[in-house]
Amino acid sequence: MNLMELDYDAKMLSIQPEIIIREAKPFMELMMECKCALMEVETKLNVLNAEFALKYNRNPFESIKSRIKSPMSIVEKLKRKGYPLTVESMERNLFDIAGIRVICSFVDDIYAIAALLVQQDDITLLEAKDYIKSPKENGYRSLHLILEVPVFLAEKKKPMKVEVQFRTIAMDFWASLEHKLKYKKDISDAKEIFEELQECADIISNMDLRMQEIRNRIEEREDTNP
Ligand code: GTP
Ligand code: MG
Image (cartoon, rainbow, N blue to C red; front, side):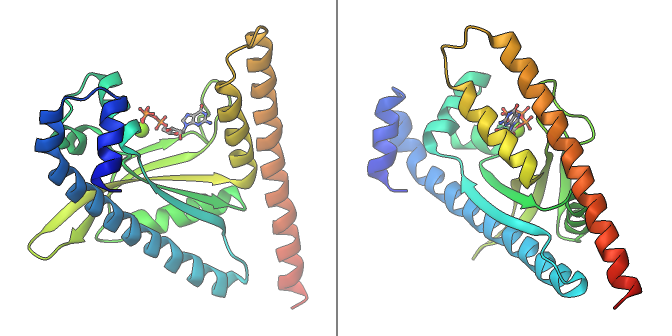
């Protein structure tokens, strides 16, 4: 991200030039620190994946994606929630500037990896929202963790927040489609669509559990006939 982009976003969001001049440098510093925190947590996850793969002869992750929230979304969220438009306010109020999404094959792998990650002694678990055990009303399922991880910079050690979302492939499929559909405004039969999506989420969840049972049965056979 560069100053030109920031300036462009600022114009789009009608931010005063004084705010840009004052906040640009701390903003870029914060973005850099968030990127470092992402790299750290991503490495931790990749290490667990590699170890797990060796031990159980399969990868628990289908994919892992990191992103830094765009300046547009940061400002939009600060405005929406009524927080001041400063870098200090971003650090205090937004916990998802650095975000990682881990897509797993099976639900039990999600809990196994999440537990191994949060028990590491440089990780602090600030918040956990388990939308797998307690799905949202629309049927959304995922495990969300807000973690704090220290980033070692030249002159300081800084605790940084990272949001990690764990989902199965099926939950991700549902969430991606539901997200796309939400932006289609001409929904005349909204209630019906909402119920249909809820039902699809239940079917998907049931399928996840069945796939896990199939995997267990196959692994039991492997154990008895090595
Ligand atoms: P915000 O962080 O302000 O969005 O509110 P929150 O902290 O209460 O949100 P939550 O932790 O419940 O969800 C944060 C993120 O999870 C969102 O930005 C989405 O990526 C994802 N998410 C949550 N709910 C839904 C949903 O109903 N559908 C989809 N597709 N994604 C969701
Ligand atoms: Mg959030």
